[in-house]
Image (tube, rainbow, N blue to C red; front, top):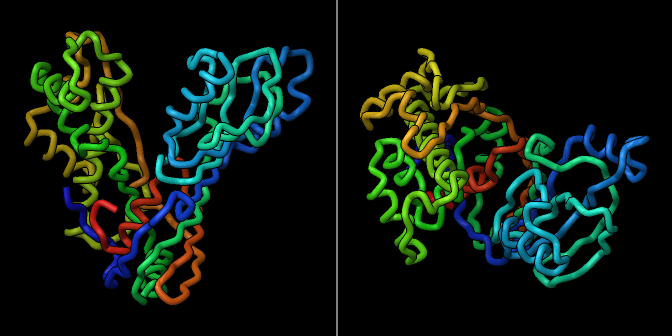
Length: 326
């Protein structure tokens, strides 16, 4: 899907060459870090290790798999607050349920750089945002004008392309599942890794992920159509349809209603009794405010900004470069 651009300025182009050009630092809730400090909570056993890791060119899940293998600890003992891009240098916190103290180690693409004991498991609710340092190579001039527009009018809070998978078809699989066309969905899933599985062999969290991708596609498509028609920032939450979601009549949700009708899907369809699962709706800010610091030297642009959790740096980069699918 080709999304609408928000700013009127011409893009400056450019690309990220190496993982070192895309640095992400996770921001964990101060309440979590304050409450579960080195001393932990009084009177409670400190069953978890709170680790700060640095990963390079590897996904969060793959990094956890590597650590689990090296430490000889089951993957289910690991907790994290968010998934970070593979092609990046990422600093993020994880917890490991283990009464033994884990030492700092360097596995090359994954390094434990800080350790402490705590008494709580880290989860997605503990993430507040991410800080980004990004370098674009081969840029043209014009960054000031685009960044001024973004800071003045905000940014559409689109889901990034990584939400839709390597083949950019996760949302298609999700739609097929909602329409009960399980055989078609399974053919696509199996074609990705050349396996021959039954739908019952696919973990429910994986199937839900595909449906979440469809929900993300609905949000992006509706927001993109809104931008083409309205040209006005909307700094409010909108509902994303799911089981028992009652979409309202604001302009973005009204567009989502039409998209659902076009696909022949109703909110009740998010209750998939055949697979014994249901997927609820969600709320998401349509637009977000972003402050961007930058330094432009010759054909290289250094960018520094912070985004709330769930927002994508690739969306900001797409707007600045005007390269669709950045």
